[in-house]
Image (tube, chains in turn cyan, green):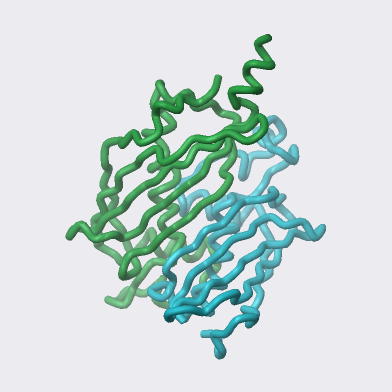
Amino acid sequence: MIERMEVGAELPTLTARSTLTTSVLYAGASGDMNPLHFDPEVAAGISPTGGVIAHGMYSMGLASRLLTAAAGGPERVLELEVRFTRPWPLGTTATFTGRITAVEDGVATVSLAGIGEQGERILRGTGRIRA
Amino acid sequence: MALNRDKVGTVYPSYRYEVSREKIREYAIALGEDDPRYVSDGDDCVAPPTFAAAFTITKGGASVLGDPELGAHPALVHGSQRYTYGERPLKPGDLLTCTPRVAAISARGSNEFLTIEVDCRFGDDTLAVRSEATIVFLGSAPAATEEGSS
């Protein structure tokens, strides 16, 4: 759990690499079997990058790990909202960051971002956790 | 073809989802989670927040996207996602009743935005989790369609 729940506090970051293994595991676990996320032939035809990309929900799940770690567990997460702003190609890393932007009435608002290898923003969002 | 705006507000039949320990475990492992409760065999087992993806995205969207009157087409991407949580996390044995609804349809540039809400309730009818998924349909906004057909 984060020690000081105050405006400006940075959450510990998380860096992860998306691979065929992470994608297949997430497809099976989530039930989202869209081959865009694991089949290069299919991805060549429909992917915005021309290649296989991670599930958006996988990146949201990683962003949520920051929140639960900071909040002290899933029971303290009230709301999570993200926008998938750029595709996350398999075989690349992304770093997830969070910063507390408001603390009010026992609720902390956290601004979240996922940044790809080229500095591109793959995700941005907001979480609300019990302070 | 543009999405049918008359479908905003349409509620689709509820479906049930039973939360299981093994599915929570699989999901937590796929995300590399380290909270031991996600993989616990005991009464302390709970699900991570985005576990709701396992029953609100594909399953929740199926009846909406499969509605022939909506006009959904395959050129789509998941644009954004919001989860609002109830009083406690999901745990093994929870039997949820999930109700999909078309919450909004809008357009920006040549793209259309469909927001599918799935309201998931515990057995006592209190909120378990509410999902709002916004799906971006590429190139089908009414203006783009008119341009294309003129």
